[in-house]
Image (cartoon, rainbow, N blue to C red; front, side, top):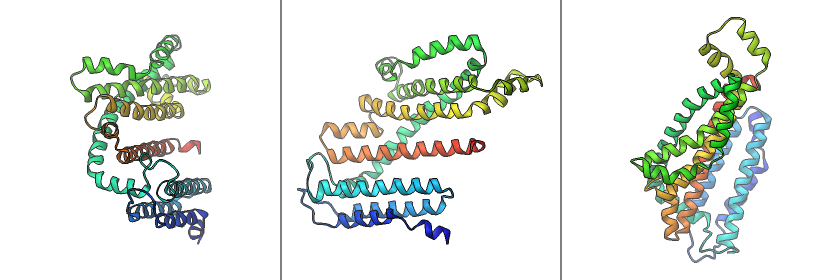
Length: 306
C-alpha cells in the first residue's frame, strides 16, 4: 500500500501534459512524427515508476519526483517553443519528435561511437586510478615529501590538459593513444589531490592507534589510510571523471575519426542541427548515467557515513 501511495505525484500530471502537447498541431517546415517523442515520454514514465518503487528513503523519492518532473516539463516546453508555436529559430532548434526520430535512425552508429569513447575513457581513467591513489597515499603520509609533491601537483594540475593535445598528436603513434594519455593526465591530478587531502585530514588518533600494532608500510597505507581517506578520494574521482568526459569530447572534436565528440563535430561541419542536438542529448545522458553509477559505488563503499 505504501508503494502505491508513492505513485501519487504531480509528476504524472506533468507527464500527461507533455504527452498531450506532442499531439497538438505543428507549424514547422519539417513536421516530425509525434509517436517518437511520445514513445520517449513513455519510456521515461516507466523508468520513473520503477525508480519510485525501488526507492526506500523519502528524500530520494522526492529527488526522483523533482528530477522527472523537470524532465517532463522541459520536453513539454521544448515542444511548445519549437514545433507548436515556433517561438525560436526552427532551423537551429529542432522539435523533440524530430530529434528522437533521428536518434532512433542513428542509434547503431551512436552505439559504435559510444563504445569507442568508453574504451578510451575507461583505459585512461583506470590508469589514473591505479597510479594516483598509491602516490597520493604515500605523499599524504610523508609530511615533508608530501609538501613538495603537493606544490608540484598544484603546478602541473593547474595546466589545462587540452594544451597537451598538440604534443601528444606529434609524439604518440595513434590518436587513440593520444586520447588515453590526455584522459590519464586529466583524471590523475584531481584523484591525486583528493587522496593526499584525505590522508592529511585523517584524525591523528586513528593513525597513532594503528601504529601501536607496528604495522608494515603497505598495511598502513592500504588497510588504515586508504579506508579512512575514501570520502575525499571519491570526491577527486568524481571530479576527474567529469573532466575526463569534457576533455575526451574536446579531443575527439579536434582530431578524432570516431567517438561521440567526432559525431557532433562531423555534423557541425555540415550544419546538421538535428544530429548536433542528438549528439548533445546523448552525450549528456551517458555522462549522467556514468556519474550516477560512480555515486552508487561510492554510497556502497561509504555505507558507514549514512
